[in-house]
Amino acid sequence: MEIKNMTCIVCPFGCKLQVRPLDVDGMEFDIKGNKCPKGLDYAVKELRNPTRVITSTVKIKYAHLNRLPVRTSEAIAKNLMFKCMKKLDFVEVKSPVKAGDVIIRDILGTGINIIATRSM
Image: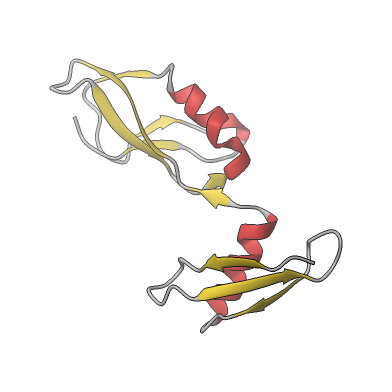
């Protein structure tokens, strides 16, 4: 089975990990190169269900700028990123908005919110 090389991003060490699947389903792994247990958890999570925090902007009315920066409140499954971004294309909010305000609650039924990252 093919070895996958990846860099752990959990801590500042940036360990170079070598990951080899142990079964045909790709659910069990042999992981080498980690300097702490966080690297093991990171590699398994990244291979089984990769997630990312989305940062973007949405339209805003009555503010000194015409775009409001937003992000997901938690990491969202990587396979949902483009659907999430498509939803954000059609969002328009009205000023005033405070950093931390929920712009979209439970996007795509994930339980994850889209929140403002700037007050306007």
